[in-house]
Image (cartoon, rainbow, N blue to C red):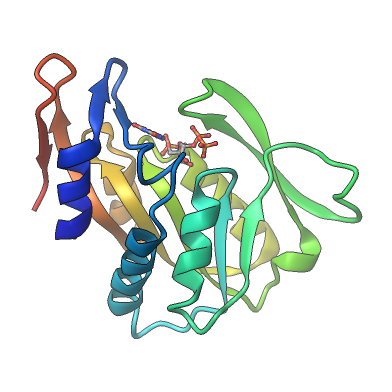
Length: 193
Ligand SMILES: O=P(O)(O)OC[C@H]1O[C@H](OP(=O)(O)OP(=O)(O)O)[C@H](O)[C@@H]1O
Ligand SMILES: O=c1[nH]c(=O)c2nc[nH]c2[nH]1
């Protein structure tokens, strides 16, 4: 998606440790017009599929998933929580995920009320790196007996391999920008096309 690539080139910075900082528009300050355009792009890609629910994970996927839902008939957006809470009652699906930016393992929890065997789920997230977050969401869908229809990602770091492994396994992964390489010394960012 050209608009997203241009924003990354203009406002993104490359940090050590394979970190791309795009928090001016994607995952701290949020550009909702851009999010809306991203939702439209995923709706075009997944047009032939029936989507009954969007599933994402705290924290950065939530805003993007909510904007995307407007392009999928206002389907419900469910976000997996990364901490137990007194607000989480009853039965839950749970797994654990290693967080890329927080560098520690988190529980990942969805109430059984909000993920069901009949659901056809679109997974949405801001970043795809090693694929740990998506593996967690896929596991929750498997536990629930829900079908993963596709995966919509804003920025995939292709050189970390998580996306290609999922594609090899047959998942339909639509990443709107795939970073092929990035250099913290020069700041140069190259995309896969
Ligand atoms: O493919 P992976 O290696 O799993 O990396 C991608 C995940 O990393 C980030 O989550 P993180 O927990 O780092 O930050 P967040 O709380 O801002 O979403 C991002 O939001 C994705 O969920
Ligand atoms: O802001 C972010 N930058 C990244 O490079 C990244 N990788 C996973 N999650 C990420 N979040």
